[in-house]
Amino acid sequence: MTTRRIETEPIDGQKPGTSGLRKRTSVFMRPGYLENFVQSIFNAIGGVHGKTLVLGGDGRHFCREAALTILRVAAGNRAERILVGRGGLLSTPAASHLIRKRVADGGIILSASHNPGGPEGDFGVKFNIANGGPAPEGVTAAIYGQTRIIGEYFIADDPGFDLDGEAGGTADLEGMTVEIVDPVADYRRLMQELFDFDAIRALFRTGFTMRFDGMHAITGPYAKAILEDDLGAPAGTVVNAVPLPDFGGGHPDPNPVWARDLMDLMMSDDAPDFGAASDGDGDRNMIVGRGAYVTPSDSLAVLAANATVAPAYAGGLKGVARSMPTSRAIDAVARDLGIDVYATPTGWKFFGNLLDAGRVTICGEESAGTGSDHVREKDGLWAVLLWLNILAERRRPVANILRAHWADFGRHYYSRHDYEAVDAEAAASLISDLRGRLPDLPGTSVNGMGIVAAEDFAYDDPVDKTTTTGQGIEIRLDGNARMIFRLSGTGTEGATLRVYLELFEPETDRQAQETQAALAPLAETASVLCGLTERLGRTSPDVMT
Ligand code: G1P
Ligand code: ZN
Image (cartoon, rainbow, N blue to C red):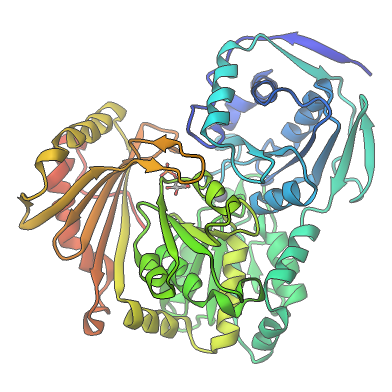
């Protein structure tokens, strides 16, 4: 077998500041495209000669072929060892754990997260660094730079490698060792260490019922092993458990819109006690009790407030972090616990430094990502298990826990309104015009609401001292309300404008309103303030989460 040097041309690769490259699957399937991007990653990190990498993905269309190609490019670049999930599978949090546990130099995750998969869907490649987390800005910028100047890549001949070999087995590929790992085993052991499995088993023995929707994505096998086999949840608790290359034609994003079946069940008379779902690559989560949807922001706050029930967090939390647009429900908890709370730009990579420095234990985003210092990615099943641990301890319905939480800390009504596939130029000028008006807004009033402060969010990383600017426009209003305008960095068609709305309600007797109704005046104000209808031609959002 030999390694070949192939001449190639620069590609339109990962933009700096985005975590990973996402494109239509058909783009990644173009001859040489994937090879080109992977070589660019290797070039950007000073080569992989002698290094150990982790490799796996969410099982979407092209995942298996891509894994085999990446093994060949890694061998062509003389990597020392690749740990690959059997079948080419690894959830994002499991990959993060494996990088850390095996002290690898980094890892490549094949996924476009919650974006639909299949030949007509999306594919993605993401590089994680040695701490197990997404590559920081400096590394993504270097990768982008390499994609613009690349002229060659190195690839070993096709070895006809069997990705379904036995876990623990190794093979030699041009001097590089390929080790097949069980995608579930190490992650499962980690969860057993973090949580009180005895208490959760006891909860299920009382007849506690649950449905976990794997959405035909990667978490099915993990959830079956942990919830059904380890914790004794009845067989059938985990549905849509088999990962499919096109996610069964679904959109594996765990929110009330895309996990409609689960939502309908949980709001019906036949609802089990607890419902949960995870996304394509297993890092997001949705939590819903019987008749009670828990917003990700509220979930984060409840988890932080009750975390000490789990053995891993019994000693208390060092601090917490949220992305800036995530609701301030967790801030109220942090104040009560006397710990620091950090507001970071959107995107998990900003939590990495805080976690590494031991400043925070739990962090999360409004987009259904929650996690802790056990890995360096958000972790869908982790959030579900911490909820279960809390329910096992408190023995009260989810709705009850939520109401008690609001009574203690006040309720932060919260919703994100997305305007998808809008004209990119119109969206960019909407934001830049708003930015230009910021100095004049405080003290004025819009739609009868007084503006208290207006700023273009910038983040000074307290650990590495870097500054990141232009991370969303935050407008604070009278009555402890705020709204944030931000353009998505992950959309693949036109632009997506996200409008985040938050209203604090301290009075218990006013905490039972329906979320969108409570936020309607604020939504109207947001629309008037930025001239949404005139500029984007939209009168209502495409998705409200
Ligand atoms: C979205 C979410 C963000 C999350 C990211 C990756 O990014 O809003 O919280 O970290 O996906 O899962 P956005 O499209 O808003 O840039
Ligand atoms: Zn994801």
